[in-house]
Length: 387
Image (tube, rainbow, N blue to C red):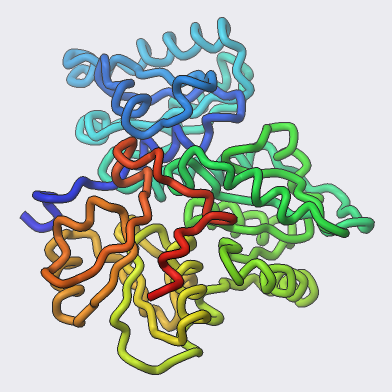
């Protein structure tokens, strides 16, 4: 029964990650799943549902279709809807049901593209991985399809912001704050590949000189653009005092062409003491907050990333991808952690005497604390810096 969540909820699934990442780009997202399951994505994992239009459909997979492998019905329904809606692209992803019966997303996507002439990509989700996996696949697919090589603008430093979605940042002013922050002097935001962006902006993304990755979701797309167009990337969210250092890090990244991660470069240099403090959350944002805290207080900070983490994002591979609630609870207790920054729902598994600083995470607690989510660029909970 390992990894069974008995007390705290699980994180949003990879299918929700796909829907969230592609929400604003004018495409059509189809989730291969049972009839009626659209509410799983629209009411639990998508805060923009009532304020912004987006074509997200469920295939209404029936028991008979699943058993008999009736893919033609799905293809015909998508082709018919595409002729009516005329989307910029079609994305097909799935749930556990087609995973168990077997389904070839890539082959079906090629068939649909051949019949419609619309760029179509199959994203092999199955509802058992976290939103990080799905959103990462989706953003990389968009970049592969629509970003093509083009000359760099020598008059300004073009930046792409990659990976901002409401699942990590909520419906806050984060995307706009990032744009305002970097649209200074010779810097210019070319595109936001996530929320706050358009497909037309993304088509010009290769003219940028550097990519800013603000969540783990954006890393696959950034790595592709580095390999294909030679654009280096910088991972980090400019929170608090990190804002003054962000420009120098980015200039350095452009100058030497070497991609780097802010938290992995700088965390752990301020103290060698055993950590009594912990941040739980998505790797890039949690790592940035942990670095900010270390820099200000000279105290060591550990990071746990339940949705998963890449070794590149972790200093000396110390950040932990613990998912099971019993593992998280045991780590906090065994290591004498006294203060934790995490979503409010984590309070139910903290040992007695451990203090919680609340930092709501939409991908974890959904709408429960959505009204309390802050724009981390300008409004990180200042209580964090008093520890």
